[in-house]
Image 1 (cartoon, rainbow, N blue to C red):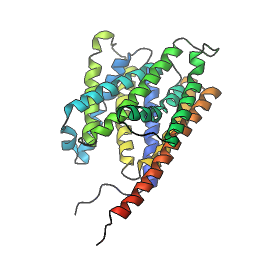
Image 2: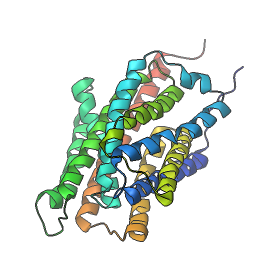
Image 3: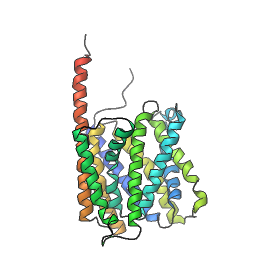
Length: 313
């Protein structure tokens, strides 16, 4: 009998997820710190390339390295790499123009855009609860970005461009999410993780002729650190799902706002505005509504399966 690699250990799962979220937020801070001197393409390369050794060691320790190197549909990874790398680059450019908490808050709209894109491209039905979640989430996004687009007193140079870049990244991540839904039908999770880092590194190298800089020692350490931290965070968040269902862990994504506020204040002297926090609260509410609905549907499907697919006799 093959021993299951999963078990129900919710406290461990929550701990892994929260630590991963903290590391991802720290990664954003590292990229923001060097954004004044390092172009986004170069930052994407270091973030992706130096995550590869961490991921390879992890896959090897789990006996999954073979799965990480085998793919049935290489073009799926190419498209995932193109869109995912674009999202990463736009996020990094946005970090140079906007406060860390604001970039974090706008990023919460990813599940909302994923719902919309899934309805358009996958034909998924959106009923009243999901429509309400989308409406609440989009209203929250509009509230968050309104000061940046309306020319208010708080507008800073490049802020409008920063908002557009981060929203573009959020929509791109929505495309990635629906694409991964197709990928997991034929591709192993290890392959998806490994080949994204590989393709992102290769794509980032294509920007070399467009103004890469030779980083000094401190900047180089921050860039390499971003890659290693990103690799470790990816491993922790993936591992967390071995010990608890995704629906239970989803709300802990929003701990990133606390991390972003603390890191943003201490490192960059940034404070979130009341308008931004109000919009973020609406987006989070919309996302929680989606999670609640999905968990209810899961229970209903489980009950239906127990009636139509009995395990006994």
